[in-house]
Image (cartoon, rainbow, N blue to C red; front, side):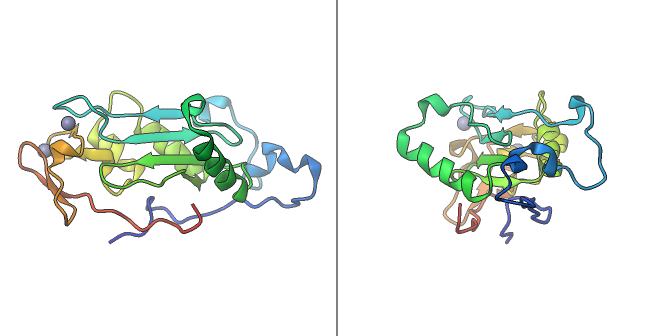
Length: 186
Ligand SMILES: [Zn+2]
Ligand SMILES: [Zn+2]
């Protein structure tokens, strides 16, 4: 059983000088020696809700939030949830890309920091139209609800999720969608 949402090793960009007022510049987020590239190479903020092939309900919610930005649905978030989100981001310096993921049976709550490489990988994995072979490169434990043989996403109801987390799609393909342990500080 995996304990990380993403297969890649967790890396963090730490502010080199937290007390420096100019430290909020995004420049320090680039690895040393890399020049600022064209914007085309930067991931874009993303919200993906692949619809269940049977009923159209979202199979999952994948959201990439840019450094220092708010989630797309922010205006509709209740104050308590906004506070928890802000607190989580501030604990991580608020200058990283942020991933909010709600899978078929498990998610990461208010989200977690990810590095630029992960953000880029997820952004290209969820470019529409969604294809299983492309989407799975994002590395989500449950493939965001996609069934590989069907090349299609299904919601929790249509995955027939069992207590053990082992599930079958409407066409009988089996898959494990069990919950993960999430980092305590998120
Ligand atoms: Zn469904
Ligand atoms: Zn299937």
